[in-house]
Every structure is written in structure tokens, then in C-alpha cells.
Image (cartoon, rainbow, N blue to C red; front, top):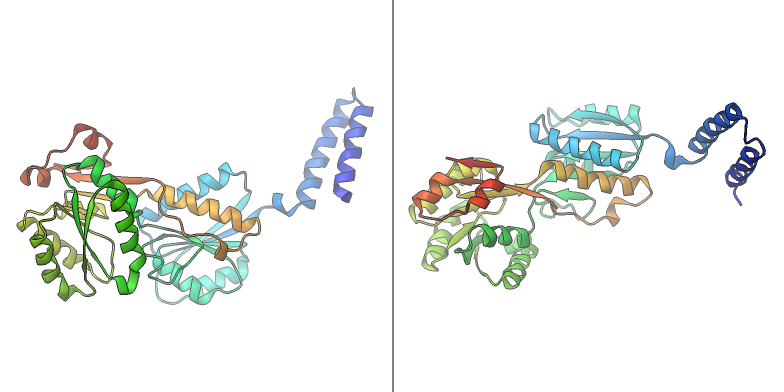
Length: 326
């Protein structure tokens, strides 16, 4: 029996021996609480350092979810945060050296990449990262990419007339996602038409091939190499000229002309990261934690474009949307 366990048992015996001494019993419970906290590291306050890629408000939502879910797990913690404002990691290194965190939370791809390159002696969990595997993250964090099955189910449930789905892929860079879409399409009894696209100058020919295939809808996947902001907007306009509706991966692209966008719930992204951080604080290595996809999503609908393309949208879809553009 551990010393702390024996003292705990003896203390309860003392409480029974003095049943009417309330003052003594109150003192005893305070003593026990302090003793347990001191003897068991799991009850001690943990230090968490958060490194943000920018001051973007979407990271605020992730932080809110992270803190709320840590609190729900009854984890006592101290929290410090720093925002990357330049390519230099020096200010972050100084914070980590003085603060000595038990775990690091990174928000955004930039912060995750710099932390991976510069920090070797403190475990870190990432969240709010697009295409983590393409950025050489194999474990220990939360992706912003909505799972292929969830994307196809979103299309099927909200635009049931759309059964033949086209999308671009670069199997040399990410064959796993392409295979997941094929599997999800079989499960949902939908048809997927994949076009290999590695660079922006291949987009026009690939789109022409999809038009010939007579796809019902184009599903736009997050690819920072393929879709710079101006390229993405131009591509959506091209699909509209071909009367092909687009479902995209971010709300701003709905404003550019996509009929809808499905994307991660950022609060949920932070909450999932909190569950992983709790495991790390309990002794699990981030390398042993699989990358998680969003468990909750949100979506927007552009009703102007759906009306132009004569696409019927159910009232229930509009009611559930985070935003409806009119």
C-alpha cells in the first residue's frame, strides 16, 4: 500500500472516532485536499502554451472550445498564448524557455510547422490545420478537412439530385484522400469522377474533361497549392459559365459563387484538441494519437446562385445553414 493511501484510510478512521467534532472534521477535509494535491501530480495545475499562426478571429473560436472542454475534464491549468507575427521563432522560444509548459497547443498550419521544426523537448498538439498529412503531420492533432464521407453525405442530404460528383485530386501528393472519396461514394451509392490536377495550369483542361463527363456538381477540396485566392474565385466563375454548381470548403467561396460551402466547426476543432491535450498530460505521446477530422461542421448556402441554376433547396437546409446569402 502506498504511504498516501494508508494515510487516507487512517484519516477516515479518525473522522469516525470524532463524529461530533465538526471543526476537526472540516480541518481534516481541507488537510486531505491539500495533501492529495501535493502527492498526486495529476491534480497539480498544468502549464499550457498556445502558439497562434495569426490574430484571425477563427482561432478565438478554437481557443474557446479548447478551454471549455479542458474545464469539462476537470483539468486545472495555467494558459499562456503568443501570436506569430513574423517568420522568426525567437519570441516563442523565449516564452517556452521561461514558462516551461507541459504541453503546447498550436493553432493554424504556420504555427504547427514552426513548432515542429523548433521544439523537440515539449509535446505539442495541433489544431486548425488544413491538409495535415500533406504538410507531413502524421499524428497528434486535429484537421480542418471535413471527412470525405461527411462531404458526400452533405451533398446527398441537401442536394439529392446531385449524384455524379467531380473533383480534382493529386494522387502523387495525396492518394489516401482519393481512395477515401471512392470508398465513401460506394457507401452512399454516388458516382465520383476524379481528375488528376497537380498545378494551376492544368485546371482548364481538367474542368473541360469533367464537363464532358456531365457531372452534376463539382466538389472543391482545400488545396493551398492549387487554389490561391484569385485562382479559386476565377475557377468558380468558370464552373458557373458551364452551369456546374460548386460546393466549396470555406464560407467566403460561397460569396464568390459556390452554391454552398461545408467546413469545420472551429469551436469543435479546439474541443477535439483539448481531448488530445488531456491524453498527453496523462502520459500519452502525441505520436500515438491519430489525426482527427472535424466531428461537427457548419455550412453556408448561396440562394442567389441556386436560383440562377434552378436548384431546389429545401427549407430545412436553409434553416440549418449558418448563413444564407440572398
